Length: 238
Image (tube, rainbow, N blue to C red):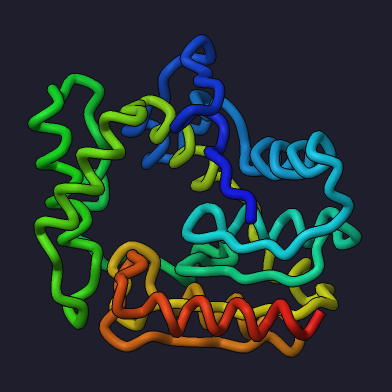
């Protein structure tokens, strides 16, 4: 199994030289500060497979990663054996909408110190995790601390948000996919409404839809077995 950090976050190359995103402008339809696009991140994933000498693979992507995996399957079907799209959408703006009162409040701040940033991350994941899954605050703190200490880079997160926000609707292209596909979504996802997952599954011919009760925009331990089993069963169809 290969997991990797997307560009601009984690231990991948940070692209601060491209400049910051004007979030207010972005929300009002001004895309002049979008620094790269989802298509660039799709090309990164394809390039990684090529660099590793991998001619084809089973793709699993969550949230924005689901969109990247969908688009890679569309652009380069010869690279993809199966697709698992988790808590994602089709980039059709009429589905998968956030139900949060103020989604911008979730955007990390580059000015936060370590303690403040970790506390904010815990609040975020408690909020989006879903009401049907009990939050383990100790685990949330552990994950938030590990993420901060590994690589805290909110400017890159903002550039990701901009890339995802300007992605083209994939619905029509998804209808042309001919590969095993499973779509997994929580029915209580406040960040990407379950309608996004339903639309994805409806678009891909033969796709299986797994809706997990009580799960929000998270991968809680109580759902790991169901998620892993669904991905494995889908991959076995290839």
